[in-house]
Image 1 (cartoon, rainbow, N blue to C red):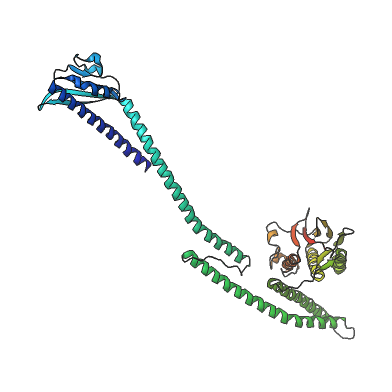
Image 2: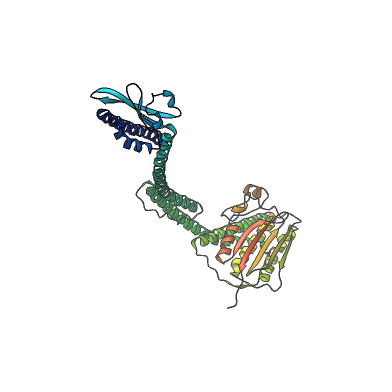
Length: 435
């Protein structure tokens, strides 16, 4: 548009200037006709004075039929025959006849300076281009503002839908998109909310089913474990050695299944927000003592050095004793599973600002960098196939339950590679304040 405007405006300005020059030439010729009629060139002097003030005009002349100069802007040339060599330089020359009673009585000449004409053309063109540029800039600004408004009106709802999809993917099935529109985006948002509602209903139905089944399984499993251990420990019961071995395997698997059922029930309670906590001041030295007592025999059998490093005089933490013991037991148990013979496990606790830092560090296989962000997810295991091949048993719920338990009690838990080789789980718990 700018190029078209520039070319058309240039042509228009040139034609306008030529038209003005033609009008001036005709007026000059008409005055010269009156002077010829009255045979009095003096009447041309006032108009000649006006013409001299025109900066674009190079000269103006009135010649008779013989070519003699009758009137000229240069008085020195009056009365001399016209010499074409006087027309030097960059001139735009126009000529018109002087008529007297429909007969030629001479001719008039008007010459304009070409550079002055072009300079005026450029000046007028620059003025018009500035106006056009201002209009174009205003139109572009308006178009940009309208475009941004339209883009925001489209992009923002789509971004909300995308964020909602991410939250649903993370398990936030109660999330809903608040977009009330009647266009395609509104239909998409309504369909998304309906899908999320159905998923939430299915998830609640699944959790209810799992909780019911798990609860119904726990009592029979407890009975199996109890009677199996009674048969193994009763000296009066005449159980054959080959039967005793099979009963021991049965009891062991029943215990594993019982742990799995308990973990599922705990995970369901945590997700439903029904897990109960009874926080009270808890001495970490007692927690460490319980953990060492519980796992010392397993550590000796695997030739793993299990130790505790508790800072003397450490302030008690505010936590549910049973749940916190369960978390520490889970972390130490995992460390024992993944630490080879001759390794070491250290349970440490020390002050950290207004909190207490508890860590479980092992010299085991470590956690791959790509698995580290997902280690606390439900049913997440580093390498399930390799663990089964090595006889390492687990449900993939322990770390998930540990993370939720610590966070529900106001703490934080994280995992990181230990210096050298192995893994370190770090817990930050609030200090129990005096009432």
